[in-house]
Length: 103
Image (cartoon, rainbow, N blue to C red):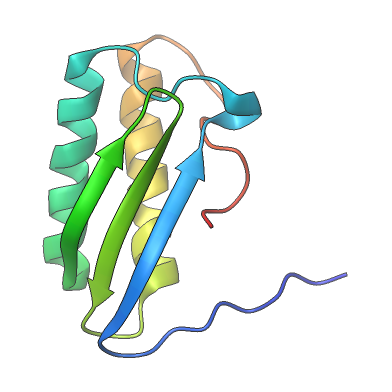
């Protein structure tokens, strides 16, 4: 069965969250949090997304985003892939970091 399409439109507000794979930690150090925030800032500039609020927990994050263009899926894919790559390089590991798609 195919996944349901995500509803996206210009100027939308989204509460987005993503958990670590198997509820494992996605931030092991404060440096990980700083890297995530730097990547989030680059995503916001690259995809014209406003970051209105965020919460970084050990094993998940919450974001309140405003998309100026209907591009939430592309921007979240870039965020997840970029952060996972940096996390894996930093901690000498491989594989998935996040559990499924963002919600």
